[in-house]
Amino acid sequence: MKRTVLKYGLIAGAIMSLEMIIGLPFIEEIGSLGLIVGYATMVVAFLMVYFGIRSYRDHVGGGAISFGRAFSVGILISLIACLCYVATWEVIFYKFTPDFFDKYSARVVAQTKASGATDAQVEAKRQELAAQAIQYKKPLVNIAYTFIEPFPVGLVFALVCAGILRKRRDDDPGHAAFGTPMPSGEPM
Picture 1: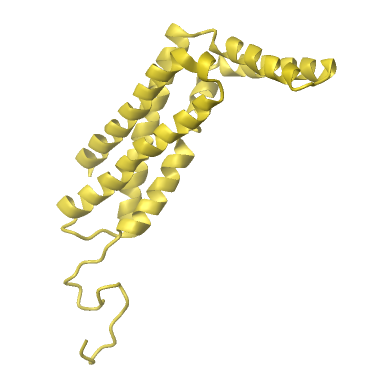
Picture 2: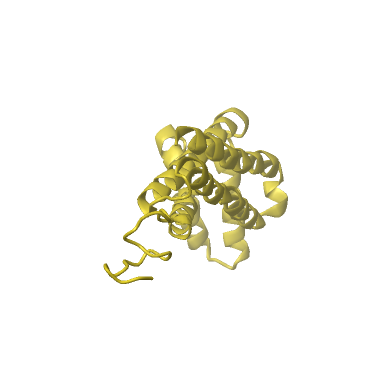
């Protein structure tokens, strides 16, 4: 299982990391469209969960896999992909864009002003973002926030793909083709 999980997890992680590296310099130009591009890329990357479970089922499981084993493979692939995503962000944030949150805060405050908010609302938003910036500078908080961006998508993919790809052995005499028990003593 380790080889399959590493292979597909690293492919998914590379896809998400590459999108982050390529897209981050253009974040000012694309604005909120960056969220759509980012999550669409995550969906594409987490397709590796499907291919990884199917590969494990076909090559290791002899064509059969339980929901639990399929989910285990899928969630491990997702975890590796998320860890790659986090590692990429940590390097980018601390080495190349330590002012990211400051720029983000300025953009959000400007959007708040443009939406017609009162001066008190703008100041409240500014203070809220300043408090978040202090927390975001802490590595563990930064890691946690970054991890929870892609993980729910990977979790959903692991659950759905495990359900789709689970398959009982064809040679199991107690079950028919669709996994329902056959009454004993009666021919099919």
